[in-house]
Image 1 (cartoon, rainbow, N blue to C red):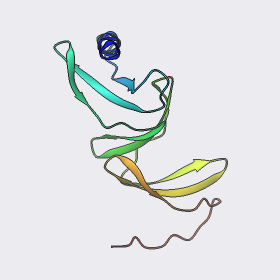
Image 2: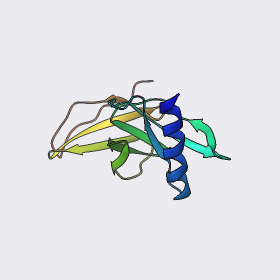
Image 3: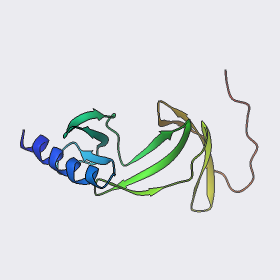
Length: 118
């Protein structure tokens, strides 16, 4: 109950600034979800996710990392398939229900990609 009250207060403060709030399940948890406020109450909360998620907006996606309960980095918007870059290596990833559902092997700047399975 105390956690819900604190969460509602935090959300109210951030919504006053027009920013969606990322709630942690417990004070020491790395699991988050985004919640929106309507008339001072939680009107919608998305699914819980870990420290990286995929955001959907206008049929475009982007991967985002979470740090201390806030978005710390978001990549560029992309459609339902993307290529992720990390340490000069790449991999293709598919999206399902707003999350990375499958990522292929890491590769360098050139690779041969197979046709998607149907």
